[in-house]
Image 1 (cartoon, helix red, strand yellow):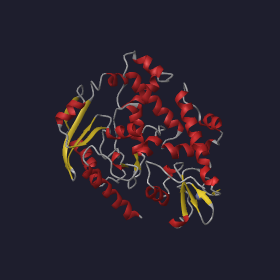
Image 2 (cartoon, protein in one colour; image 1 turned 45 degrees about the vertical axis):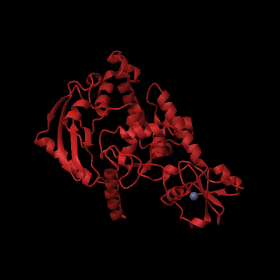
Image 3 (cartoon, helix red, strand yellow; image 1 turned 180 degrees about the vertical axis):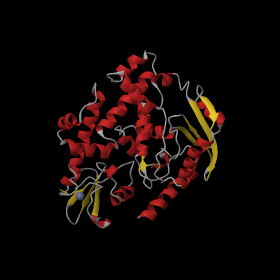
Image 4 (cartoon, protein in one colour; image 1 turned 120 degrees about the vertical axis):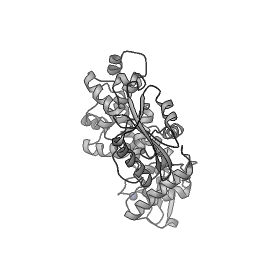
Amino acid sequence: MATAFSDPQLSEDAAYAAFEARDRTMDGRFVVAVKTTRIYCRPSCPARRPRRENVELLPDTASARDAGYRPCLRCKPDEISRDRAAIAKAVALIEQGESIPALAELAEAVGYAPHHFQRLFTRDLGVSPAAYARALRARRLGDALEGDGRITDAIYDAGYEAPSRAYADAAAHLGMSPSAWRKGGEGTAIRFAVAQSSLGPLLVAATDKGLCRIAFDEDEAALRERFPKATINSGDEDFAALVTDVVALVDDPARAIDLPIDVAGTAFQQAVWAALRAIPAGETRSYQDIARAVGKPGAVRAAGTACGDNNLAVLIPCHRVLRSDGSLGGYAYGLARKKALLSRESEVSGNVN
Ligand SMILES: [Zn+2]
């Protein structure tokens, strides 16, 4: 007799819907057994969907085998845990490494061919192993700079071999030089405007490097409180073009747009925000998915908090994260806005299909 599917975070209907949608993020969470063929699959299996009455949801591959099912040859459900274990091991190697490991080295350590492993890793975490390692190093630099030690020490402690590389990374990932970062944005000029959007007043603020704050219902006073050491001025006509782009994004959040961003956060927050940016428009994820995507499946609550700490409303699409049962969850700017943004996106993706 098979162990019945039971997951306090996931109803049977939600699990079945994930199977229908071939939701890859649910792989490993449960398996789908097909009574007529006696075969079990991962939720994302590309094969045609059987009728629901012929499907049995089971907690894992072991229960499926116990119940007499055989693994599907197409989606190879038994390899999920091996893949996940390999990715987790690679992440651990990257995190423990003094320098950035080469792809070949990582692949060999986890027993996969380099190209295949690169694809697997990127599919699961949204970035390549090398990009993950570089972002990690830049985040470590940001963390080290929050301490009191010398900047040079922070640079070497974060794993850089030379300051020049650290300064280039800091510009790319932290949005300012290490010394400006240390001083809480001192010396950073921020321009802003409050524009009228279809979902209400929208504050848009940016440094020279990129957008640092997009928020509904906020004004200049709130911005000054957030960046007490920066020089804050109203945006000029050039700035108006950026504001127009951001406002257009509220009307059409599915619009693929590459606006420069300049947001500071802890290593964990940066990882969560990167995971949010990886959610395609018209799709949603659960807080659990986000926690898993950043390699901390147990940190669901912390992932939710990091989503809430997002500085760039709409552009970093925290509105695409729902509770595991599919309900809306929270939103810093009110659930009506979250609902409106999601429905605008689903209309767009509906037109495409
Ligand atoms: Zn399958």
